[in-house]
Length: 125
Image (cartoon, one colour):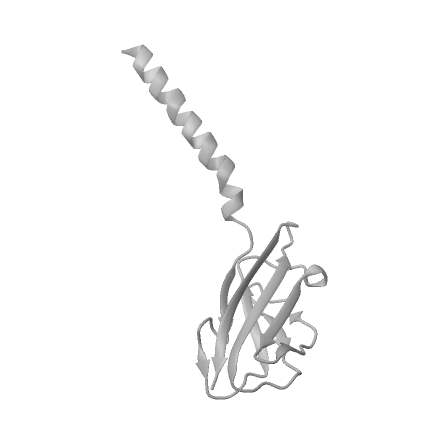
């Protein structure tokens, strides 16, 4: 009986070690929410993008792109309120927008140095 409990305990320890080793991959920076939100349909064009991430970003190595029906839309520099823990990254939209679908593409790096990227869209009617 003692032999079975040792095997069970070592199997459990191995499973815990494997799950712990896989955990950091799930902790990479993720987009938590945005304004405009993914899949939103807006009646007026937004003047800025606000993006909330699961970790604080290193803005100097992060890039953001907005692509519409006629190509890339000009964006101003991204900023974040340093004194607020859960502050969004705010990116002014400086180019003109017309009706259609807009894809937001982001390629970011968090304080831990791990890169992450993603995309979502919204529509202006």
